[in-house]
Image (cartoon, rainbow, N blue to C red; front, side, top):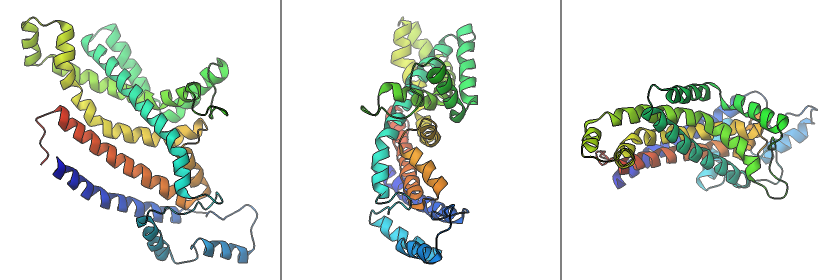
Length: 310
């Protein structure tokens, strides 16, 4: 396993470097710039600002300087937020994004696994059809559509929860986070339910489950001691892509619900051409996705002894 981890890290490093390079040049190729204002500034002032941030240099030189600072752990200053470093912005937004992401994944895994198992054990019944209908709806409606709908219904019409922002006194309170968490979790609940249903149906039809039943084990013991462990293996394989989907989905959801997480900072920075903030968030997200995929592969190996790390 140690050799497998080392090889994966060896592949991850050049992958991240390629992502950083592509993001760097794509940001510079986009029209507009961080200092393009509605009212034009004097050219002398503009050149002074560009020189202060090293943006008066050729593009290749800016790239070399950025990578040199990055290797020293410096993500640079924000180009739009004065006296703010990119590391400070990410540190402020990370707790919000991490809380939403972790709780969304936990809700998706728990509820999706439960619904998928119920659908499999009641195959071709009204309960099965109802759960699969819910799953299709959850997959079909993207989070950036579902979020405003939930805010409109439960926030404005019913008035049960606030529609956005953090509590001025207590910050991340449950009533402020419930709608973003549900919005992010719904597509993953639907996908996991479908995966779990298909996997559970295959497992309960296998020979060793028939043998367990023939020995007189109760239905509960058969499901929880034998079937469930094998049925969750495809779900474990999906945890990496699911985590990536939740991370990318939070970029929009935090903006919709006005939560000061990394995603909101990323969207604002992209609109304002704040290159350094965009690059910092890209690096963090790319690293997290690669790390979560690695952890999912390792967990799969722990649960499935047949897997060999060649």
